[in-house]
Amino acid sequence: LAKTTQPISMDSYEGQEVNITCSHNNIATNDYITWYQQFPSQGPRFIIQGYKTKVTNEVASLFIPADRKSSTLSLPRVSLSDTAVYYCLVGDSGGGADGLTFGKGTHLIIQP
Amino acid sequence: NAGVTQTPKFQVLKTGQSMTLQCAQDMNHNSMYWYRQDPGMGLRLIYYSASEGTTDKGEVPNGYNVSRLNKREFSLRLESAAPSQTSVYFCASRPLGGDSGNTIYFGEGSWLTVV
Image (cartoon, rainbow over all chains, first blue to last red; front, side, top):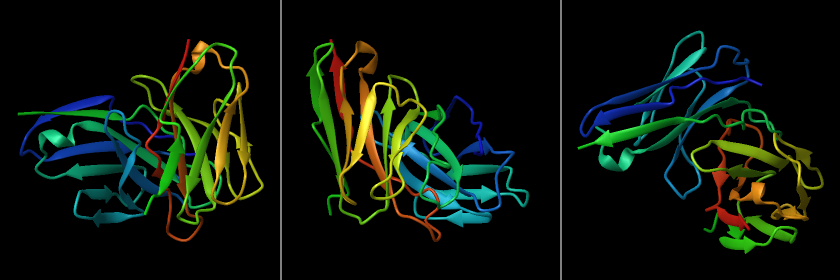
């Protein structure tokens, strides 16, 4: 079961690009890297997922180096509404609990 | 398109009472999960069901039981509630296999207070 390490908290300002890095040194060959966002009093929401290199969607980009031992979630031009907790998960697509252990996540605070 | 639906949303229990949290998903997902989240903490996995008819313990199963009633429904039961079980409970589901990876869909949460 691949474990992940993220910074506990980060802060930035509106309009800036924010990068949150997650370490997952013992990632397995079949593992995907998935990021979630959670607002207070809500369940986590899927943001982006990748296996290698770079993935981009309308919300964020995910950068994964060749060794896949870390990944970086990039949020372009953040706004106050991006203040949330961000979780990095690593695991495969099997039906068990692999990759479904959430850490404490990164509490991102965006200031005006 | 309801996704994952949990009931009740709020509940207050007295110590020693029992109750069941209901969860249903309409996405035809194979796997379903129950998490708890204490204030300021991450989510901890209580139980999961990889497929209909199977259930397994997660990180914090003590004091809970689950039932995978059918493919859609996965309930969580507290037989004798304790104040330490005061928490927010999230049900989740995910598709199996392919490139679904760790794409998990969460319900809106059930706020449980045990007094």
